[in-house]
Length: 224
Image 1 (tube, one colour):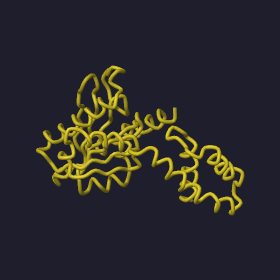
Image 2 (cartoon, helix red, strand yellow):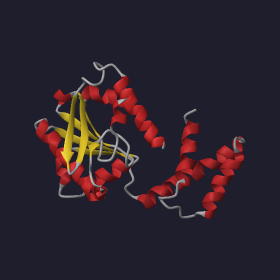
Image 3 (cartoon, rainbow, N blue to C red):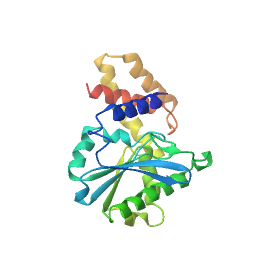
């Protein structure tokens, strides 16, 4: 539900803004492939000849989330940025079959988007940025059919590539910081619960939600 609300807010923000500010910027396309109509928004410095293809997280999030951030606005000054919504995600349309919800199909979709950008913009220098689920998806694409030759570089932002290592790193990172939180005397019961939970789950699984809740709590406190 939170994801749906967030995507609704993104869509409302995009289409409530001045048309001259958003809808007329860059180039907007819909790539039709195996039942899906996937939006591809190319913005920024197209003349640079350097394109950054974004692969959003989720699954089910939206590449359009990047487009409204200050950090990507800065990137657009020097490079062209490709914001793409995957099938069943964001502002994508069409009527794809449920059977197309597979890693193989999503990897194929990445390849279709890459080929489209290459053909549409005369073989620019391509870089790829994958976030969260998109990090794992883009890594899967890079590992097939010599696809690494199609891009100059890959940026992984919080991507899930080695799940068992990731949960162990999150555990170590969290437990290193919890004693200081207990010493501060703020919410000691919660932080003790974190320690107790890890004692009961010495080998957490990637599917466990608790490690990421604990890490997010620490991360939010560090931003205050």
